[in-house]
Image (tube, rainbow, N blue to C red):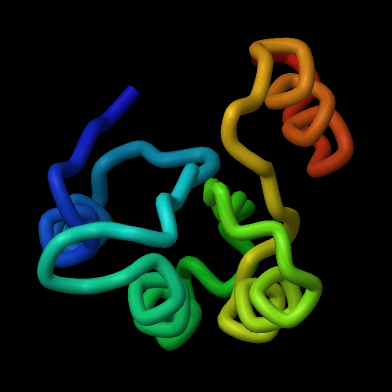
Length: 97
């Protein structure tokens, strides 16, 4: 598992080539919000298919649609349980985690 304090730090992890199988992205991050991060990730050819889950307390349909348009594969509402997160990962084909 790799942790980053904000979107820019997370981009650096990807640029370094850290072994990352999926990304949980919080909408509200310092220096770069979650949607900006996902749009930046999707510009990397190597990470176009990287599973990314947006994590947010935002529940409005417009916000969910915005996250999906920015590159999220799915959306997880805060607070969430471990089982809910594992269920989302399973849907993305990451069932062995």
